[in-house]
Length: 198
Image (cartoon, rainbow, N blue to C red; front, side, top):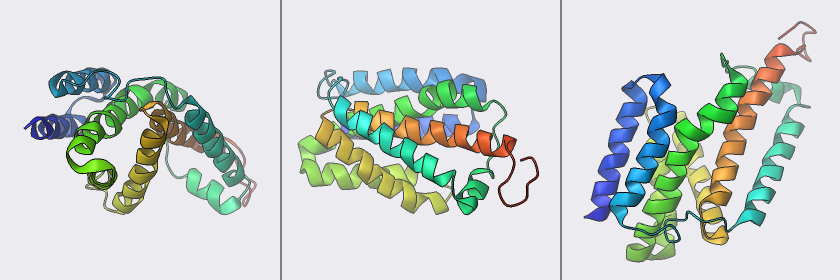
């Protein structure tokens, strides 16, 4: 019953994110995350709201940073990074991404839902179900489902290994935030294959 209530709240948040005003999203994420923890009756520790896993968090952030650094040296990757456009990239990366997206998704998928599924279905069930739901969360963009499902497995590993949502939160924020900053940098710099401003 608790899992069903959690899933219903998550579905409502997803609809709101799609149809609600963008300016409300930085408030929706933290409030909805707090609501999920409250209705689940989980204490902070089991919900993953701890500082454990800091080593995994640092390693994940470093890995993502190196990955983007390498990508910026590859012309094809630079062109791919230049495709998305963000009106306020720094604000989006540092404020919008964590408040509007990462806090809620990590508390929901790797915090509350993970723990509830772990108790009922064990670690394998927690891995598989949260990863699959995380992939489906990114519908209707079907091309993202497979990637985000696999990302859900990686984030679940960090949750399991680190003992909380700190490590998956840092990986999620770093991947999204640095992606936005890298995209903005490429667009504003000279394109390596054309020599013209991006």
